[in-house]
Length: 325
Image: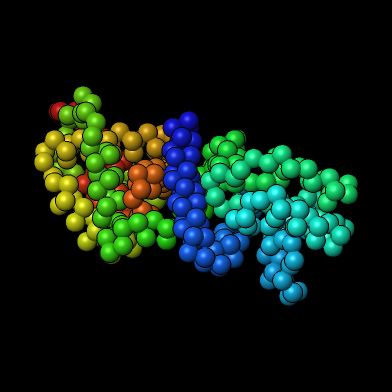
């Protein structure tokens, strides 16, 4: 699972890096709505990452809050999302927050949508008046969030956070190559990734007659699910076809890709106790994560169609090769 953890962190670093660049650019252009847009994102992210129950404090029917944006009254946490990282900003916020909201909250957290925040040695004792605020603990930048993601003990929890980043920040990826079909470039990246290795000896044995029906018989419990991946995502056909044409389908590349897909799909099947549905989704997650980490954004459905197409060629969960009679 260490491989999956490393993949998760690389993808998270890519998405958070893009967010930091976008916030810096918008700040330079004086787009004042940047932090407002980030509030909803950090509400979802911090809830998923830390198990908080934040809601937007400005949308609860009361007037706009004077010193925080998000609130979790059950855990008594308030959060301010801001790209202003000065000690003066902290002092100003504390001076307003403590007398007005100390009875409702035990902690005030500053979240900066930037990769690095400056260190501070400022003394806030005058503003605190006994309130428990520690700058090194209660100031979070994107690097701090990435570190918290790294320390999650549960890889499924980690993957859930990465999936949220991918969903919420996908527009930042699309902006990198305007006018280019992101699915095409992503599938090209995936094909190159799975075809770069050598051929294991077992992969030299070819199925003479790929039989998708026979394979579905092996997975009767999940047959409808597996067929549905091909039928419901058929709109991705053009992108997959363009990617294959762009890469080229020489014999060596095709055999290497087939070998990779066979080996890793069987490993995924074993890791998921023979559950074809879970194994299929694990492969989708792995290949989509590779594409995103490499800077190529795509819909998971495009990866599902690609794998389903390979499934019909018996390259995914291959039929057992029967010994000669």
